[in-house]
Length: 564
Image (tube, rainbow, N blue to C red; front, side):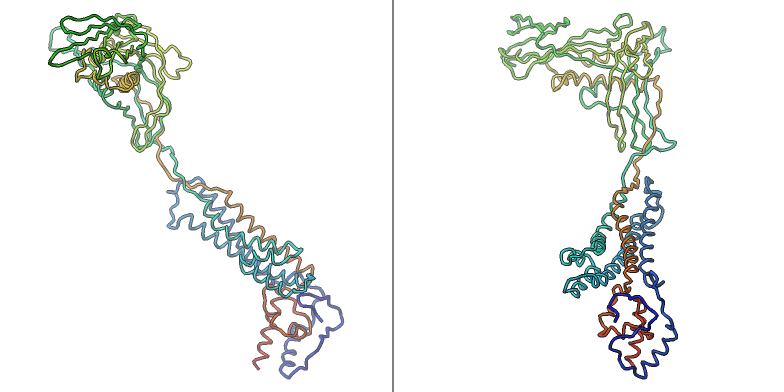
């Protein structure tokens, strides 16, 4: 008698089934019709009949092809712009379809392998409740829940069923991981043929200006009205950044240099001395405050029945050095300043006095990390390099001292009248005011940070010089924001491993089935529906049904027999 799920070696002796049943007329006719097809049976079984594992093999091939298709598609779109994808269906949709198909094709061979392994387990297991084990195998082949239960419900020495269960459970994660492979990232990319521009100056020279209708040369007083406006705006509000040109609204500017103005402001409050005398006419004091550099700045108090006690809130004194004949023409303008706290009495008005010495001079500036984002100028860093006065005369020349570290042209020049014009602008801005009045100098009194305010003024003047009459245009690459498709290949590792595991599992199960000469019944229920195995599971020639295909064919014959 043939054991279920096991192939016996065939001998030349005819196979005699146990407990043969008497044949009816119908069965004899059926037997005769099939004897022609089964006159001889093979002594040795091949690995599998061409139809035994065909569906599982095709399914594995399609699963691998779908995964290869995903890899090819990802390789093609890696690093490309999203705008280059012209199909109506998004790349994510294509990848999702391929991954779903790969997962579906992957599950079929794994499920059939687990089902086939239950017959192998039935023959090899020494457990008494082996039929209950078959139910556990069937549950594991149907989905993740049965596969999870399989791990602790059924101990087996073979790792093959466990591998199949692991693949079944892990396949749940394929879809979420596939969704993480393709990401869309916004990047700034260079535009061919488009350039960002900035203007810089090596020379600041408005030339000789006069009214030709008058006798002689009468130089005009207003040489650069925008310079005057830049200083006034810097004193009262935020400075105006240079008008960088950006055709796309988003540009990065490489470092560039230009002729510029810098300021230095020192707090000398602790080293400033005072000399005060009583004034008989104002019933107050008249004081002179002397800074370490020799600036003499006056301040006074007064008292009257009408106004009460008043005192100087802020005062300045200037020392103009910016003239064509001055050997220190690198200094445009210097100023000394004292200011006092508000709401003081005649005894405390000098408490909290602040004194500053400030100087404006020419320099070379290097501008780094400047950019335009969404049409707005984003200020970067400014580094000032000291310049040395080299030539005097109508054209005043300067040269950068630290030429080794300054990466641009370090030679500059300015027309002497433009130097004098800058001095005039600054002198007007810092006009001495006595007691506080509502003029430009009032911004100095309310400023929280005097050195920073002076730095703002020098930066505003520098930006204006960049766009002077002799400025030149510097070109930089223009960029735009674009969306790119980026592939993260690590997320493809698990799907690839699962597909590989399913293929290897199928190969091993096929080889084990052949080696053990086991019947290829897989997930068929037919063996359980036959009450006797000696006749239904044999061919008409009394030979075992090796495969599920043959078993299904025999089932059809039995069904025809039962209907007659």
